[in-house]
Image (cartoon, rainbow, N blue to C red; front, top):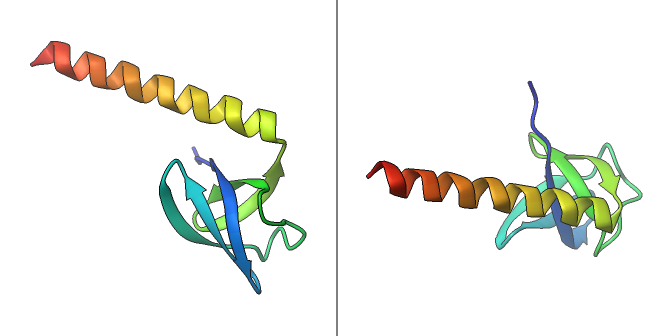
Length: 80
């Protein structure tokens, strides 16, 4: 199974974008998606933007990730 993570493109220099993943920024290759622009949301897998996402779709996915993290944290606290 592969996991793609959505993030927001903050800046672009040539074929490398700086992408924000909820406060964590990483450099991501745009070789697969050269038409991506700043402020776009992208799906990232192993350091490559593999698809541009609609803003609503990206935000919905990020909200689900936050819910999973919150549930996990609550469960971990209960186990202590």
